[in-house]
Image (cartoon, helix red, strand yellow):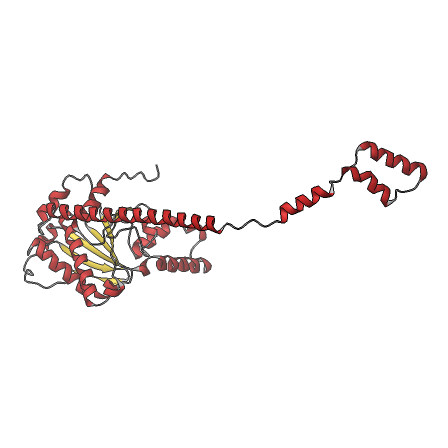
Length: 333
């Protein structure tokens, strides 16, 4: 911009003669403050010249990046493989040391020093798509029966099994017979009473007919009772959606005030229709994958899984009980 002196001269000249400066005179005033033509051309050349390509340097840089990526990937793969072998070997060793021989006394001995046990244990099992036939269902039923027998041995009264597709719900009598047969292998003729049920489906209580039918109900009750609940994905978010629709319709028809809808009401309805909150949720998988498990019941639930494990094993179940016994329930404090 022109300095103040030139501006004053311009204004005095304009007032004295009443004439505006010509374009040539205005250019003469501004010319000392404009950059020289050489500077303009050099600046333009610097800004418009494209960068010089460097193919060799770019190629070497990509090779270095690829090499670093391969090294990191190799080291991580070796670490994962060593960790898997270590966990598999340790599980086999401890499985031999802590094998229960289907003896309730040995199972009770493994948990006798625990300060507490869950009153409601929940387990997530999976029926693989390729195992949806009779063979896969048979393996699933056997796993359910084994876990039920372990829980009955230590006195856990409530066991819920979640399987996403709901295949077990179609075979409640078969599930009861399978678990009762497993109880017979563990306890002999005198075994705990068993109830198998599912949400919105009538329960199946002691429906097995076997050679020990002459034993009284009192002798069976003295050995404990196990309630087995079968869950699927329709008992999760779908139940919440149906309950929300029901409460909204009741509120629209003035059967329920909006102020009466609270967390306690929803909790009571879900507990009655599906189940209450489990104390411990156990996953027999390498990672925590809830797979559509009912979300409302997990507010205060302890979740346990073992890394690199994909099988239903007694040692994993025992570790879960030990972890639960050491857990501190602070309840928000």
